[in-house]
Amino acid sequence: MELDTGATAWMLMSASLVLLMTPGLALFYGGMVRGKSVLNMMMMSFGAMAVVGVVYVLWGWSMSYGADVGGIVGNPFDQFGLSGAIYDASGEFLIDDFGVPGIVGVGFQATFAIITVALISGAIADRARFGTWMVFVALWVTLCYFPMAHMVWGGGLLSGDGPFASIATPIDFAGGTVVHINAGVAALVLALVVGRRKGFGAEPMRPHNLPLVMLGAALLWFGWFGFNGGSAFTADGFAGLAWVNTTVATAAAVLGWLVVEKLRDGSATSLGAASGVVAGLVAITPAAGSVSPVGSIAVGAGAGVLSAFAVGLKYRFGYDDSLDVVGVHLVSGLWGTVAIGFLATETGLFYGGGLNQLAVQVIIAVVAVVFSAVVTYVIAIALKAVMGWRVSEEAEVAGIDLAVHSETAYETIQQGSVAKEIRA
Image 1 (cartoon, helix red, strand yellow):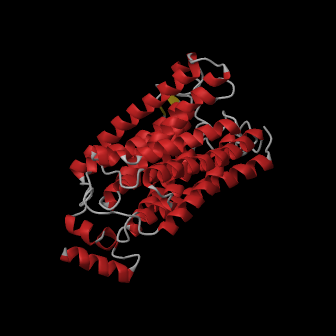
Image 2 (cartoon, rainbow, N blue to C red):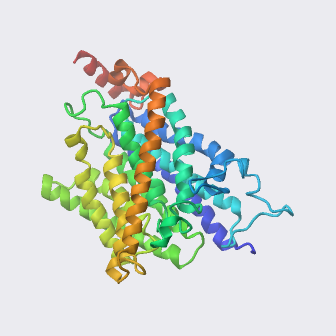
Image 3 (cartoon, rainbow, N blue to C red):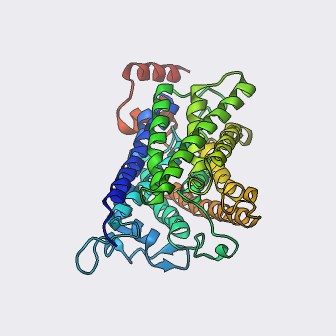
């Protein structure tokens, strides 16, 4: 295959856009926490970039796309350190079927692994040890993310080469199962294992900087064009379809969320708009290449409505998912994955395709939920026993930024709020 410079440029740009999503997430999450925790929250995203960036080159690519081991994972030693993934026998760069060098694909896929782990951090804001989080990142991406990527995209159990393809070919265009269901389930498990914040449900824990939240949401939306558009793997009509569907679904989700807020609470909020952006992006991720722009309106609107209601479940059931990773990523990820069974233009139920596509979408969603829950629970419990998850109560009250990182985001405000909490 000859080098296609246009396709290569598109994939390099897409990889850069997806990498930008993690700093965007840091801003989004950072604005949602209290002022005394903003730096720690942002550090959890940057820490994920640091750990996964190294791990992916060593064994992450090989575990995701190396020689299949039982349909679950790729052999980590098959292309360890990217051996055999960059050059062919003659020393020339390997070129994929789209005319893009294989090393560009490595970079693109690495950014997916980074953002997926970073998403989980929002569930344990304000209270988790940074060192334990960093070890969790390395273990979780190795034992949960890489196997899931292999199962869905690497020819494994949940791919078109797996056993469920006899029903219909599973569809996950850019990561409904691999990224959002995976991260959403992990967030729920971690929130349960780590436990609730001091004062959860009894005192207000409002976002400290809503403009920061909206800036983060804007950067996520911008970066998501690489996330979904780049998953076409070349600059073609599918990339264009994914771009339009991503825009339309996100816009519809914002409207859906704001309507729920207005009818339920009396006010449409900026936090609701920003959260609707993320819900719509999440839902259209698996479906971006298989639904029409009109269908994407339904996908996005459904995500906005469902997630707007779902974020309140933590108060009903008593789990402290601090920044609503479960309500947004798990719920919208499930909805987007299952909605393909109804709305896929070639195989969906509403287009005369019967129940097969719907059945296989439900199956892969359930398998992803179970796999992520079991693996995450084992990792979380092991780390709780060996390292511990919680900072001290004093550090949590005084501010995790100062206690863990020896710095604060807003010096004057920080000192005043800490003094007030200590007096209380």
